[in-house]
Image 1 (cartoon, rainbow, N blue to C red):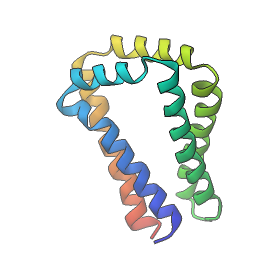
Image 2 (cartoon, rainbow, N blue to C red):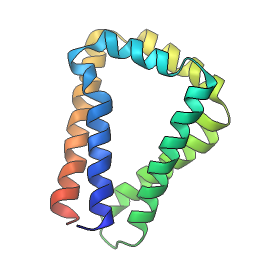
Image 3 (cartoon, one colour):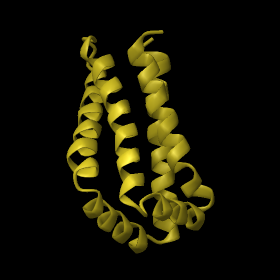
Image 4 (cartoon, helix red, strand yellow):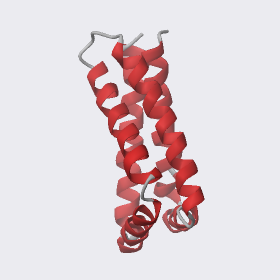
Length: 133
C-alpha cells in the first residue's frame, strides 16, 4: 500500500469520524462544534491539524500520475490554503462565519450533511483500498 492510498483512507476516516455524529445527534454535535470554535486558540490548533493533513495529501499525490490522485492533490491544496490564509490568520472572522452557519442549520439539514459526508468518506476509503493500491 502506497502513501496515496494511506492518505486517501485517512481522509475518508476523518470525514466519517467528524461528520457521522451529525446523523445520530445533530444538536449535541452542533453544540460541540460551537464549543470547538469558541476561541482563537482552538481555531488555530484546528488549522495546524488541517494544514498537516493538507500537506501530507499534497506530498502523497504529487508523485502519482493517476487521474484520481488529482482529487487528493486539489483537496490538499484547498485545505492547506484555507488553514493558512483563513483559519490561522483570521480566526475571529472564521468564528463569526462558523457560528452563523451553525446557528442557521436545523436538524434535517445537519443530518443530510452528515449523511453526504459519510458517503464522501466511504468514497475516499474506496479510492484508497481499490484504486490507489
